[in-house]
Each structure stands twice: as C-alpha cells, then as structure tokens.
Image 1 (tube, rainbow, N blue to C red):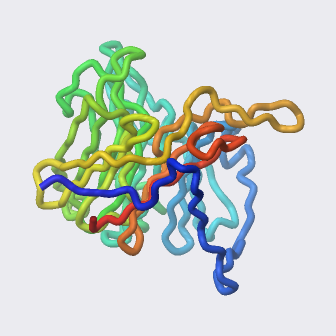
Image 2 (cartoon, one colour):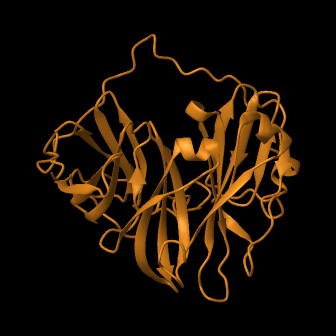
Length: 317
C-alpha cells in the first residue's frame, strides 16, 4: 500500500512553528577543537569542503571533497590519507571529488565512499571501501564498485553520493547525468550481513521523475527518503527491507523560493553562492521524520534571508 503522510502544520497562512527551547540539562560540550592543517589536508581544503566524519573509540576518519585524514588518538592529531592514490584506478578513471564516510556499529565497519572521474564513454563509478576498525587502522580496505554499467545506465556520470544506515541495510544515493543533463536518481541498498561476510549483493531503485534523494539516518527496517516535486510539495518514499520496490506519497509543504542564494558578509563575499535547495538533511527519531533543505529568502513566511526549511512528519501516518 502507498505510504500516507499528512502535513503536520499548515504554514500557508504565515503561522510559524517554533521549536521548544533547550532544557537546562541539554548542553553541547566541546570536547576538542583541532585545526586540520595543510599537512592533514594536503592543502586541498576549500569553501566547498563538504566534510564527513566517522569514529569508533579513538579512531577518527575525516573526509573533505579532495582529501581524507585519519586519527588514531581520538582526534588530537590527524594524518593525511590521499584518496587519489589510496586504491588502484579503474581503467580510464581516477578519483574525482565527493566523499562520504560512515561507521556501522552493528558490523564494526567503516564505509568510505569515493566518487571517480568520467571515462571516455561518459560513465564512472562510486567506490565503496569497507574496513573493520582494526583494518582501517592498518589501511586494509575491501572494495565494491557501483558502476554506471552495473546500474543498467551505460554512459551516465554518477554524482553527489550519500550514505545512510538502517537496521540491516546500507543505503547509497546518487544522481546520474548524461553530459550536463540530469538523467535519473538512484538508490542502492546493500545487506550489512553481506558486507560483513564479503559476499555483497545489492538492490537498486531508479527514478526518472525525482532529482536527488536523501535517506533518513537511523531509518530502522524501513528506509524513508524524499525529494522535491515542486517548491510546495515533496515526495516521500518508503522502502521496507522485505519489499522489492518502494512506495511513495506526495506531501504538501510551506511554499519556499529558489533562485540564486545570496547572503553578503561585511567584507562583501556571498558565502551562499554555491547553495542550492536539494534535500540534504534527513533523519528518523522517536517516530518522526525530519527532511531539511536550503530555502532562499521569501517563501510562505516572507523571510528576509535564506534559511533552512524543515518538513516534520509522523512516520506512522
């Protein structure tokens, strides 16, 4: 049956939903503040760093767009790990850019996702590297490549990957392009048991209707993911672990604006120049789904500056 989700609060009238203030006991503690210097990043950090971090105990793995760093002393010091030379290159490809790292506690496994460059045929791979904590300390990774060919999409370039972990599955999302034109959006899921045993199989879902998926973290035995239909509606998908394909329901949200994001600093720099409205935040907690994206100034509440908009939904209804 199709998933039925209803808007929790009608914001079309301009009414604002206010989050409750933090209780006195809800404090944020800064444990350590470490500057990743040019040695740790190989002088390749930038204002489009897209950072990602995972840890287990005192082992910390950190990535940016063009570098990776690891720490074996709880983040006190970091050593550079070059993603360009970490693994053998596939024919006609090399490491490109986007990276995501995640730690799966259930199987004591670090997952390192790397995007590779375009081949002469216009396709590429998203490479998954797996290692237990002990293996990651030694730099011993097992590789699994998601290629354009394996997805049945020869000649497309796979871009902007992300990872999410459920109870028994790992979820990988990416967008596919033919040249500069968007072709499709893909979700691949892999059983955690197969990752642990080394015998990996995968299911895939391909959409040519919705651009860019984001799977809710902590999604349990059902993966919830979402994408924009319009600037006033999102499509929320539901994919149970036992189901062959997902179902979806379209959900109206408060209208928001796109356009060129602009927020000028006192020294006249637009720090939101690279911002866009793709859904990039998603989580499931205590039965609630939260999907978040960047919205430009304006929208239903006539906001004076760009802001983060959140759709908050009950997963059960």
